[in-house]
Length: 239
Image (cartoon, one colour):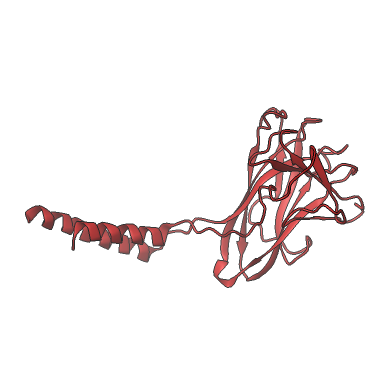
């Protein structure tokens, strides 16, 4: 077997058994699909302006749910142009920002939700948020999270955000999809830290499959190809 063919087989096998599988389950995770006129747009469950892929949800006694879709340079987005303030204008209560997506039978397994959060710089202070992924199309389904769903931004330990430099902090939520079906991701500002229209800032939401561990059979295949590759090199040296 030629060195070139052996190397090609080795690289192909490595790609098959150790590649990080990706699943584009979240739509508009950077919040840039919608153009904003002015500094921000307030989104409510019934407003004319709505965000692609996302919806604002009321819960409990909160009847004035809203979020603000904030456009840079009012404050610096983590990526692109837009980010979200989880306490929208005109409400003193946190709202749920939710997105429902489907997981197919071939997409089951462990995933990691990643996002970046900061504080509303109009009244900078420690702020927090909650995040979860639940079964079904509503926010009240059973959680599939396998890690903490509570996130805090502590000033100055996590940074000293300003409009020009938001010092975004990355948050992670690990989940496991054990059955195919619909699931709902939601975020909510923590009422203990946000009020007077000043809530946690959110941007760059992604949900990717966790790195797939290399099975024992995969390691054996790689070892075998490595041996073949080595023999090919030695034979070439003799020729």
